[in-house]
View 1 (tube, rainbow, N blue to C red):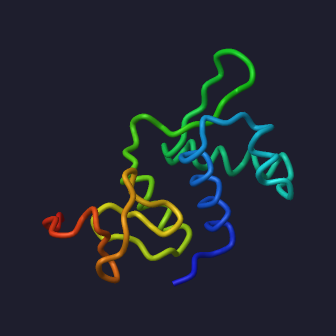
View 2: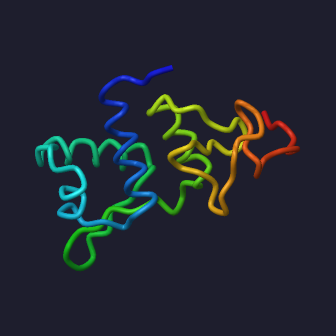
Length: 121
């Protein structure tokens, strides 16, 4: 399954912020140099509205980081959906965004960290 273009861009931004954040907009622009400032702002706004990232405006510069009310599992699952990546059915990890302690595939949709875990509804 391949996600659409805009979803792919949101996935890239989400992964970048969750794995390297918090980041200032200037840092994001260095990682994503082809994105115009208004496009970057709109995509950041969408991820904030989805409560996947948060904005810290205290001090300068403004920082974008993982939303503390969003679990890393939920963020990885959204990343997998947006990017179209194959993901673990339990924790949402992908090849690009693995489990915190590392993992490998033991089945097409189960990682080694979740092997033997009960399915949840």
